[in-house]
Image (cartoon, rainbow, N blue to C red):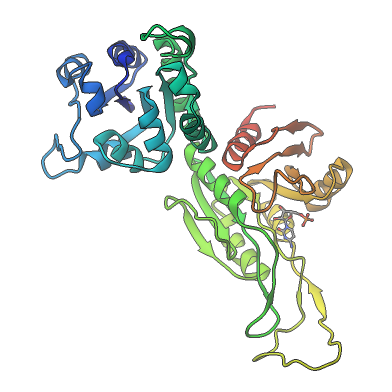
Amino acid sequence: MPYVVLGVSGSIAAYRAGDLARELMRRGFTVRVCLTDGAQRFVSPALFEGLTGQPCLVDTFEEPERGRMAHIDWARQAAALVVAPATGSTLAKLAHGIADDMLTTIALAYSGPLVVAPAMNPTMYGSEPVRAAVEILRARAAAFVEPDAGEVACGEQGEGKFAGVERIAEAVQAVAIRARLLEGQRVLITSGPTREPIDAARFLSNRSSGKMGAALARAALLLGAEVTVVSGPASAPLPIECTVIRVQTAREMLEASLEALRQSHLVIGAAAVADYRPEAAVDGKIRRVDEPIDLRLVPNPDVIATLAEKAGGSARVVGFAAEPSGDLDVVREKLRRKGLHAVASNDISLPVIGFESNNNALTLVFADGRVEESGVRSKLECALWLLESLSEPV
Ligand code: C5P
């Protein structure tokens, strides 16, 4: 039975978390409940222990199994973390990584799917800090079960009523199913820029931050895949759960990717590979002279096209195309020339997306002619959308 951790925070709606726990159990989950101090004003651990047959945690240092750190065990074993009801304070703590009680400590140790069902006074729910926290958590692909509108406990009218138990349980079931979408699949991602040395101190490179590759890695992990990332020198942090092979040049990226290709089911080329490299890197440093100098560039191997050729149908190979216009004919030509299963194109002339941005908007063009649009979303949401679109049966 998959575990879910149900985190209950201090809203009056905490009294309904018992029903939610039962509903999740009916749907096949083993439910482990964690209460904040605020929640304890409304409900007690004894209630949840009785309902679930599992220990209910409150204190950060509680250890139901002696010598085992519960916050780590619970975080590792959970198929989903459900925070319901989520107060404004708990939302803000989740958004900013403040771990000052057991629930938020588990949340910080946890990297799987998160479901959040807020419940609070409508003015609090509409407040700037809560809106900002919701936006941060959405960008991290948290599934929000929106509160209902109506009269809340304090008598005010507006949005903030705890969503129905059924609706929350359905959302939990949906994310738990989604978390197994790529189970047993090995995904290889190329990411970041490459650096092509000119001399000992200088190189040719580009503006790729590696954020899209990192988002793809996180998304593939969230969908249950095993992930290898071959990454050029990029600043975006990669999830610790994936295997990372660091490279500098396009030729190193090709070599490392060919090695990883053998075990891969899906390959995604998100790297911004330099198309050209200096013919020969100069030993030492090129000294300044007061006249033009020539830098002769030779073409680099096309990493993704080579991977598609070598995969020969054993893996689906998908490319990216950073295009300065929305011209899909250019994308289709690229797809054919490189022998890819699909190409995810983004229009880099749009200021709100691309390169260092946290957002993107993808047009996914398939070899069979289908075209799908993600709309503007965070890079992580785009990555999840992309992987889900790729795994849909035609
Ligand atoms: O032709 P263009 O560079 O726009 O193609 C983009 C796609 O090809 C991306 O998936 C990129 O990772 C890949 N690519 C590559 N090796 C190159 C150039 C591009 O893998 N030398």
